[in-house]
Length: 297
Image (cartoon, rainbow, N blue to C red; front, side):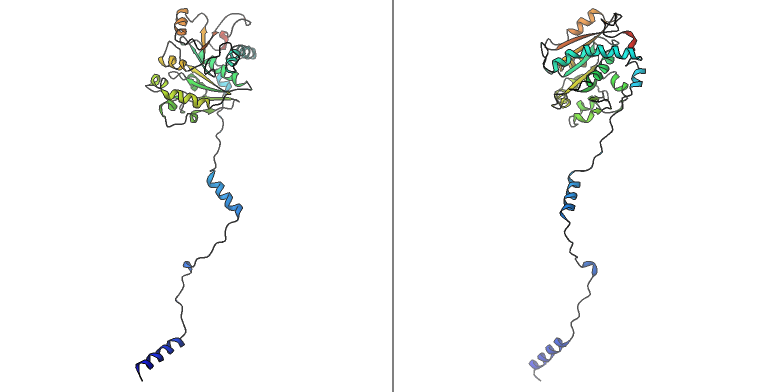
């Protein structure tokens, strides 16, 4: 038999043998998935694009504690009288903010409460004025503790240890709105003083301060920024802080504030600012005075 014939016979024999398929690994089999319904795919996209966040609870303002600390009057008659006097104080301030004043200052929504020296009741006035302004339906109030040495507002509201004004000034990467604390008093928010800094006066005078003030305003024409400041004659940063304000409320303690000290404090303010004097601790009849010594001072 020729070699050609042998090759032909071998080819016929191979064709006649059954074909055996190699073993198949079940794990390697690709099973086609049915496409998810459109609604499920949109829901999945929504979950990725908008992560779930939980709103923090508003900070509780303990009015009974403030009363015990002397920041609020302890009797019903005192409450009504204080409320009336605060209305007399805030009316010209709000008129300037709304553009109804005689000489409207720039940045009229920036208001600082200060005094010539310590112990004249400026923090008492600031806190009560903030709560009175928050009752106005047309405004919301951002109360800022700018008295860094004493932090009286921060202590009174139990906000010690929370980041505040100083952290917003010292860290330019921080969004100033992060230090704003919303309270359970309608239309009232608070910025604590924050941690004391060795360069407080320099930070108050920096360009960052103007950026922080603009962020606090948030381009909201309804927002009043009310600062509690250290006394004008006590620290250099109080003078710098006052320079950013459109309106300045100077608390004068009856029979305690010396006229020479008051005149020196007023000389530190600008002619373009609206300056209001508030008489505190007065013994005058209720129809004439602003506060009496029964309010904790």
